[in-house]
Image 1 (tube, rainbow, N blue to C red):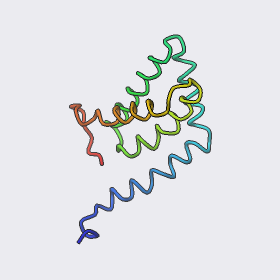
Image 2: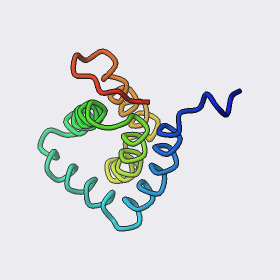
Image 3: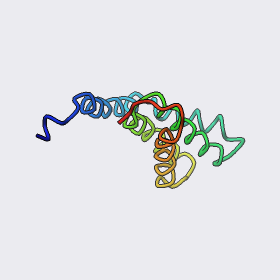
Image 4: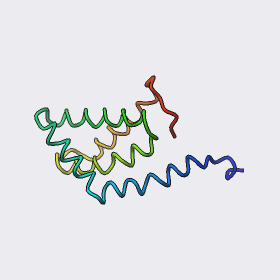
Length: 112
């Protein structure tokens, strides 16, 4: 009964998101994005970087699935945490909150 109630599209999104996240990390896109974001927003400091993470997470969650947002943002946030000395827990909490913002937005996408 459980097997028949599963949505194959949801399962494929989950399965496909993890290799995508690994690819972002392996090709250096995550570190390049993190360094670019830190360099661009260095005049406004950590507050600007945290705001950018929230805004990007919230924006992406309106366009693509929440799982994909988490998989894409996690490697970038790890690099930002190392570059800025920001606790990883704070960044994870922030992009998770940004990701869940789409539930309160009028511009919702059907997501997982």
